[in-house]
Length: 374
Image (cartoon, rainbow, N blue to C red; front, side, top):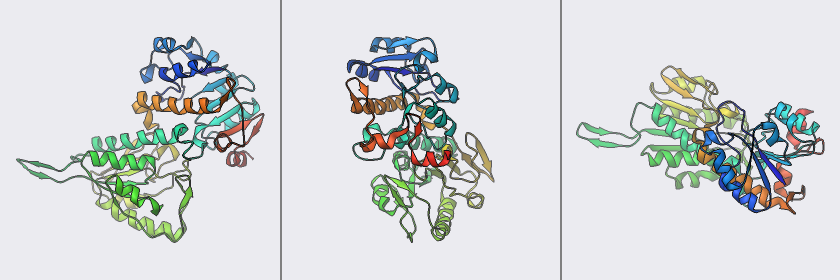
């Protein structure tokens, strides 16, 4: 099987789908790999490293995109889909409900498209879970962004000039990103509080050093697989009061909440922001899904009544080397798990493959995306 690695074209995306250590592993399994020249440069991997690992360097994106299986980080543009070979395979984070035009083009080209963000969050699938790998990085970097923006120390310091009290950090959402944010803020010495609509994660929050704050839910907000679902209207009202009180006491608020891993619920209103202390900071890590704060402007930083609101996009690209290594390992695990006789054979009886398959043989198989396309 010939595997192609094109350079990513989305603005600001510095990651690469496959790094040299994975190239060596996949070539050793009997596959050929073509990497577009310069594809790994922004992540710190040179063409010579790829050739030493056994890859062939291609001069154009078209050469890499014409492979039997194409690996990417971001969803392909329609122009990139048009360069794929009819009937080829694609493995990427397609985010199909956000990229309907690309999904239509993939179906038209009869591409079998696997989306890593649709892989079920099961024990067996953990090694292939790019969402968790990237969320871990986002939680870590989000706290560093907040610490740099805040005009205070994070840790308590006892100095000759007197004692400096620790910063108060409030983390909203205790999935992978939230738990890493808690752990990072604690390592920096902050006093950390956290909440999640799934009360069963209280123990996880406390295990990484934060104090749990929350409300008693009238109905369960757990959607399975580590995801949350929308709250009832009454629970939303009660949650809003709790969030307002906690944000007013906090120096830094880190938001990580996503519904189903895709849609960002609006949790922090303008009124909540206006109750916060001047000089405090919000880091909205759900900006890629629209943002958890009403005042967030994805990709920008704004100031409202003295409160700085960061809404960074593609946070993992800020740590491109390790983000690429982890992404590459996730994709490699998928390839090696489902390769038989040097090719990937579609098996819709397998729960991982069934969940990950978005298009095949001219059809859209992913139920939610199919519904949106109509």
